[in-house]
Image (cartoon, rainbow, N blue to C red; front, side, top):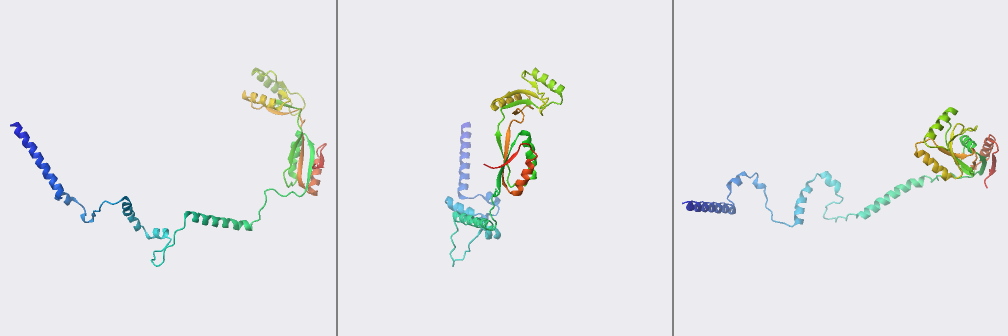
Length: 272
C-alpha cells in the first residue's frame, strides 16, 4: 500500500513539472503579464556586437542641452560645405606656443634690458690695513658713502694663533666661580684671562696655532654642554684686513680719504 502511494506521489510531481514547463514555453502567464508596467515601451532587440551596443548606449548624449552642443561644436553640418578636418593636438600646441611667444616678445621689445650689475666707470681704490676692531668700526662708517658697488674685504695677514675661550664674566669673583665649576667638570687646563683687553675676566681653554685643532677643541667642549665657548684670533688684533672699493669718482674718493683719516696708519692706494 505504501509503495503504491509513493509511486502516485512521484507521478503527480512529474505531471506538475510538465504542466509548468509547457506554460513557460507557450508564454501563457497571465499573472506576470498583468503585473507589467507600460509593456508598450519595452523594445526587444537582437544580440549585437560590442561596438553596436556602445553606439546605442552613447545615443542619449545627443539630447544634451543646446548650450553644451554649441560650446563643443566647431563646424556646421551643412551638406553643401564639407567640414574641415580638426587640427591635430600637435598643431594646436604649436599655435598656442607661437601665440605665447609673440605676446611675451611684445613687452620685451618695449622694455629695455638692464643688467643686474651696474657698470663701474670710476677708479678702484684700496685702503688698509685694519685690525679686527678697526675693521668693524670702518664697516659701520661705510654707510656714509654712496658706494656704487659693495666693497671687497680681503685678509692681508692671518693671525699666528687662535684661542678657545669663554667670554668675559661680570667680575673676577664670577670668573673664579666659573673656573671652579669647569674644573669640577674635568677641565684642568682652564685659566682666567687677566689682561686689559676686551677679554678680561674671560676663561682661556687653550691657544692653538692650527685652526683645525682649535675647532676640534671647541666641538668637544660644546658637546659637554658649554655652549658659550668661542674661537677668536690670538693675540687680539693680530689679523690685518684691506678693503677694495670700485667705481669711485673724484667726490667719492675725497669722502673716502676723509673717512680714512679717522683711523691710524690707514693708506689709500690705487688697486694693483
